[in-house]
Each structure stands twice: as structure tokens, then as C-alpha cells.
Image (tube, rainbow over all chains, first blue to last red; front, top):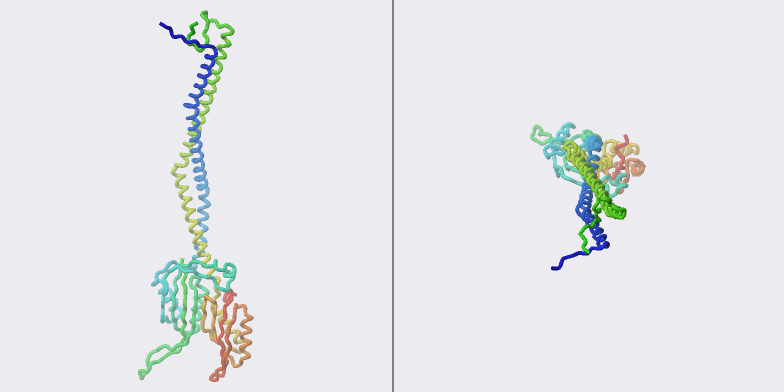
Length: 212
Length: 195
């Protein structure tokens, strides 16, 4: 019976030895180095993301006090800006506001027409103003406004005082037009039943009321 | 010749190592030992690095997940949104107020000034109307002399109250023996704001 024999030369031994070392290196890289390396790479990505998140969070937290201060300033400025403006009003509130104002000046309101109640409109600056000259068509602002027209009877002096009050004291109310007309109003009957009339002045006043 | 499958040269039977065998032994063992050292050191370093990264990541995640930090961040974000809205609102209100304030004030300061200029030139003035979009204030002036009317118009044109002065001639009325002129003046931007 033939005996199986293997003849290994010194060169074979060296090659096998080198092969074994190669296998060891491969096994190390495949099962230790590469997984660890991937783990570390993934962790570094996650870490970078987490550091960015922390940085963003810290930035926001550190800005909080400044934001609160800015908020106070903006609110204060807003109060300053809107201090002279009316809050949003319903028609009846506008009616009451204007009618009481006329009564304060001893004027009689004969017509009151509220054309728009709290609608958004565009307000252009005055055509001869420096703002219009500087900004042209861009100087248009959105406003919340109510437009109303009324006819008021009274003396010229009282009507002039009313106009002065609106023009000088009320930022949120702007006269868009006015016109004077002399009229006769019924003031009763004489002994014979004839109508009595008084001559007076009628002011037709168009107003815009601005609200915030 | 038969050879046993032994990759490393063997010790001799007496347990002594000959010089040649010792050299062979060292040559065989040294690379393996070096590899073992390299593998161990690099493995340990990598494990250690991973552990450090893990630890740092946990620390960061704890900071990010902290309820107080989340509340502070959310508050800051809410302020950012609110401040942006307030800024927009303020800019809009500012523009609106600037537009409102760009209009002249058709108060008695202006109308009295017109009447005063009329008085200086022997002219009686009656204010009729005002129209804000064009800034035009209209009035009727009456005079016994046409010459006075020209002086009056000239003085109106010289006044800083007006950006433009327009009139379309005059008419003479036999009934009251007066010249009548209808004048329309566009108010200057600062009319009524001098004081």
C-alpha cells in the first residue's frame, strides 16, 4: 500500500509562514480594524452633528437674555408707534367715538356714513412730500383703516375748532377732505305756523381712522 | 525522506538550541510577536478612541436632551419668532405713520394765514374746501379792485405755505361791486407744522 508522503521544502515553509502572517493580518483588519474603524467614523459623524446641535443650542441659550431685551425694546417701540392709533374698532364704536366728538364741540351731526369698517388699504404719502420724492412708488404702506363721511352743522368757529382738534391732536384720524357750505336749517314754527329757519354752516367732512 | 508537518524548527532532543536553530527561531517568532504587539496596541488604541467618542457623545446628548436646556432654547426660538413679527409690525406702523405725517395740516393756522394775506391786500377770503390727496385748499377771494387780486395771488405764491397756487381769472359782479376769484392752493408739506 502506497504511503502518502508530503515533501515540504524550506521555501514552502517560508511561503506557508508568509501566508499565515497574511491571513493573520487579513483577519485582524477584517474582523477588528475595519469594524472598529467604521464605528469610530460613524461616531465621529454623530459627534459632529451632536456638537453642532449643542453649539446651536448654546448659541440660542446665550442669546436668550439679549432676545428678551430686544423684545422689550420692540414692544416699547410698538407702544410708542401705536400709542396714537386706535385699536381695531367695530362700526358702532367708531360711530360713538365720532358722534361724541361732535357733541363735545356743540355740533349737530346730520349725516354719518361709514363706508368701510376696518379694512386694509394702501396709503400713499402726500404728493408734495419729501417722502414721496425720496421713495416714489415704493412709499406705499398698508394700513388698517375705516373711512367715513359726515355732515355737521354749526358755526364756522366751532367747525374750525373741530378741524383743528382732528388735525393737531389726533394722529390716528386724518381729514381726507372737507367742504363748507352755508345752509338754512329748520328751527321751529312761528305763531302763525310758518317755518322758522336759521342760517348756519354745514361742514362735509371725510375722515380716515387708522387702527393697529 | 519523511518530514513532519512542523512549521517551526524543533528543539533538539536534549532541549538545547543550536545557534542556527536559535536564529531560525528568532526569525520565525519575531514577526509574529511584532504583529501581535502592533495588533494589540492598535486594537487597544482604537477601542479606547471609540470609548472616548462614545463618552463624549453621551455627554453631548445629555446636554441636548436636558429639559432645562430644551426649555431655554424653545423660549429663545419663540422670542426670535415674536421679535421678527414685532419688527415687521413696527416697520409697517412706522411706514404708515410716516405716510400720515407726510401730509400737511389743514388747520386754522393755514386758513388764518390765507385770510391774513388777504387782509394785507384788502381782500376778503372765504375758505371753501380741502382735498388731502392733492393737498388742495380752495377758497373764494373778493376784492374791490382787480389789482389787489394780483397782489394777493403774488403774496400767496411767495408764501412758504403753498407748493402751488392756481386760479383761473376773476369775475366782476355788478350786484356787490366786487371782483371774485376762486383760488386753489396745494399746501406745502410742512404747512400747518411751523409752530
